[in-house]
Image (cartoon, rainbow, N blue to C red; front, side, top):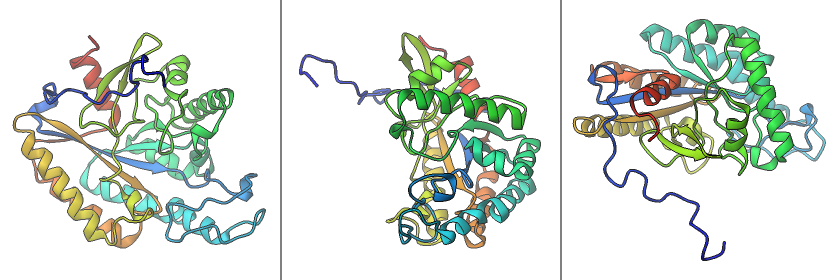
Length: 305
């Protein structure tokens, strides 16, 4: 990058003076749980790929020769769509709490039963790609087609187009521009750099970022070094919530909790999630909401300057 060019990263953000979020009901914290639905859309020789998925499961993949299916990894992923999703949905339903779905459209298509149940429960669906693959490995034309196909499929299966977007781990240099070009997205969450939403300019147009988080995320069960037990997960969630709830007496923030059907959907980890849900419910100034609720609130209360 030439020295005369402006540095493309914003290292300052709100500069230590965050805006008053003004969450509904005077809440000290906005808490959003996100269920990542990916099973059946991951990289697999069965799906025509040249390799099998090797991450975010109970075992490290890569044991099979090129061109051969990894039935073990496939089975570990199937646990999420066959069993994990129902356990997670039950925990939230029993407590009357909402959650968001980051949806790989192909995964929704391959399990219409759970897709219908999540939609009927009232989950809001954000696009997580047509498939659970790296968008930064796609050409611009391929990524444009994947975004359009995902949006159309999610709308067909759930009754509403996705209002948000989140890539697998990180976007490509084109992602945000292509989302604005496609239209209809109120936000994307392809950032981990703040505790509050913020606006950016994309092709001269304001676009909202609702940052996500990877520390308060069960992804660390499948990505060492990470959580060794449900207790590790629970303690980190508790500490994160309590710190932000305390700060919220002066400057309310948001907390994102990332979940995966095949990870926290396992019995031992689900117990930790249940305990944390009860902890959150015990605080009367915690706003547990869908992600689209946060985006709509920010559009209405903190419109772009």
